[in-house]
Amino acid sequence: MLDHKQASSLHDEVANAYRASIDLMNETGEYSAALLNGARQLLKDNNIVMDSGVGTPLEALDHQLKALPFEEEEQHRDTAQATGL
Image (cartoon, rainbow, N blue to C red):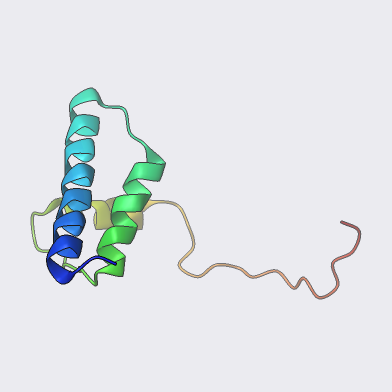
């Protein structure tokens, strides 16, 4: 089992690998949904959150998502009567 220092070092290496991979994706314009999801999950698992401040990329993404033609609340289907799969 890893001690605290070893685990911290490994955690840093994983975070740095995600950062380097994302930098490379930005340079090439080729993105990996799996890699981005892994980075997102690493942040979530470590309770890393951020408010979308004015003028930030996160705020711009928020505006883009709100502009999409989706309803605010999803319509849920009643699947109790579903048959024949």
